[in-house]
Image 1: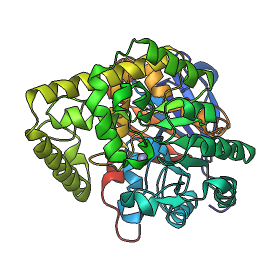
Image 2: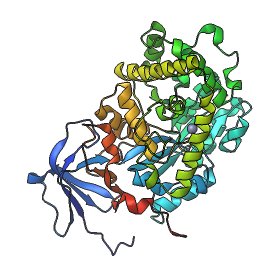
Image 3: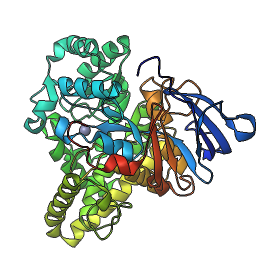
Image 4: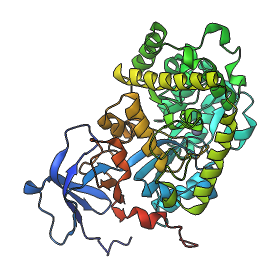
Length: 456
Ligand SMILES: [Zn+2]
């Protein structure tokens, strides 16, 4: 945008503001946006819209910060649905494993305003020191554990926003990677397998991904001798063998969580990913469970290729689950209950929970699956406010970017969502999106969901 055309300020008036700090909602608020930033926020009585402002009447509506999905993968330009994220109110994503050239190009286009999309933060390839899983080899970089510092430096120099450690990284290497990352001002995220349980926290990891950390709760007899040699899918399958037998209130859980919380290691459980198992049995795992065109109101809103892939992938899941015995189905349900209880207990004990989805993993939709993640966090036991914080303030804090996005405050990037109903009354109201603003630009979800014309 040239300096000569200064955009008109925008004033959103009359809405109830939930600013993402965790403070009480402010009724009849005015939110003023100048350029790409929030400039003034306050009660309507004390905050008149500036001269010449475009006034958006939002009486009866609810304004929340733009949402952050803390675990996505771009997987190349054709699997990246930037507009869908925005249409779902997701204005920031953290890519936790991808190709640097793709990521840099897509981020460049969004930052330049060439294409609408969420703020794209990324780690570049995830780091492995053993044989990487062949299926994800294109997303990973194998490094010599003895020289992990060089790999961290190289990524830092390439402009990444964080570091991602993957399944074969050992605790000693993780510790050195974390030390170097800290020195370079970068946080570390880990999908752990070879680094067991709270050893990741002791190494200095800032956030453990999925719920691999719960592997430490497995019966000793079932513990794999070399967990880093399992593929991520085998490790997940292994967890479902014993999750039904875990006592979420037990002492082993206390010990595990004490270490995570003492080290201030966050948990990004990606519940929506684990929900696929009970979901494939036909169980209700949240609104728009994505498996049944009759049941979900989401499908008609999706672009045809996304919708078709979703239906196909879910049909495959359902077929795979069709031969499951009644006993095995019961154990899956019990295991799922235990996962929810563990997340709730971690949160109640003072742990930081972040919201991520692992989009576009099997049947996970850009943006919209984050709504379901928030719903599942509430089912686990978080309040709707705490679930919202897991996708607003807490991600920004965990990335040391709280001065840039994540809440609605003067000086921060103008990322917000206007909702037609109160998300604190029912978290599923995060789906009632009327408008989305990213860095001062306002969009309507329907316009964003329409497939962009070529070259758009
Ligand atoms: Zn992932």
